[in-house]
Image (cartoon, rainbow over the protein chains, first blue to last red):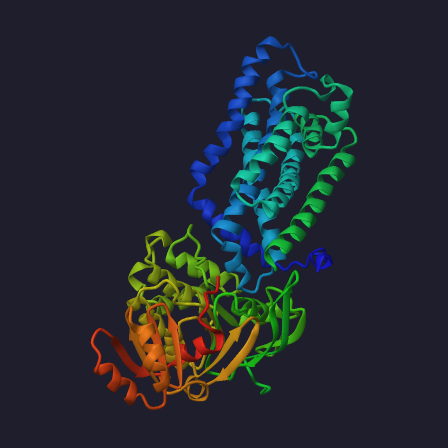
Length: 261
Length: 306
């Protein structure tokens, strides 16, 4: 019985219907949703970038606001994917029973969870891209290499959506998500090089940071925004992809255990 | 079991932990009939439905739904089934029309075909004037009718209805019954679970009574009444009823049951009971024909199921 939940996923293209359903809901609230998603990261970027930036000559060889912009692109992607996969996903799964309704149609739970994963990544893609566009308009993005950040945002979104879906599969109520935010999301915000270079941290914290997905997203985004090819880029991509794939597999198995009793 | 049964289950078993909730269930539906699965809460009705839809795997037994082996081909089977779940799960983010459109897409039906079906479904549900209304503004009865309409978006041959009228007022309930009869006229096969015996008697050609995971009786409602129970019932009410039953009623009836201050006397000939009761003041009574509820209570007992 336990083994059964861990059988490999079987997908059909019907996951697209789940994605489209969520898109239709989002379209009804697109403007407030986009503003909400943008306000928070931009406040960080301007508040800290200009405020703190005046006291710092350069950070990692660039202006502080330029340094910060790449970090905020990644952190806002993380936030948006996590919120969508957890709070909104939990609403659809547990509160509104939207997933139950879908499972009475010819979709499987594998289709539903995949649809939710891709949707949460898509929504976070909008948030991350919006920050990147604002940074570009402000002249903080000097090189066309930054175009490579666009697919990176989506990959980062997949990784965090997958982890969020694990929490959703385990959660008894909305309150549960606070643990994840306090124990995982906030530490990543502070330890993964969003606000300051990793090498300012004690060695042990640096080692820990290397295990976290946000570190790898930032390690790719920052050089790209500055116009450089990131060192060991293949490793960073591999870590993010591993978080996305493994996270999704665990999330799917736990959701099967929860719903297919 | 006929080969062309829209749904046939044999030897179904399902356990959760150490508790077996479906313990060897066999049944088969005939095309175009309404088959009722009756039972107290926790009898295993909803689990049986979930097994037949392929939403959970049986520990043993086989299920054939519209020619597809379930759970192996559950996706193909569900393509041709409609489901009215026990609890409304309409999409609160959408209007009535959008609910039907989005649900139709889950079946890979083209938007053009769904949009062509929507007016008829709205008429069927009596919601034609409310197509753009949001779900939160609907009454319980409207939501149930919309859920029924949604279950028909794929023009299913077989419709599962899990307690479709629970929580509805009598008006709303009668409308749902009328719509279900309409579906039977269209030669659709219905599988209905309910614990309203009146509902089962009105709609079902055949019923199976389920308790503790087993089917304990099966047949046409009238046949079950004839087989299992005395044809006449006298219900006696009031503080004095239990005492009267002990002294007089029990001797005059073939079977006599009490719950609180109500006594049920079952008999082939109720005349002596009625003569006796008419001669006494202070005892109210009701004489009626035996019904499916009497059979149900006899077979499953009167204790509460929580």
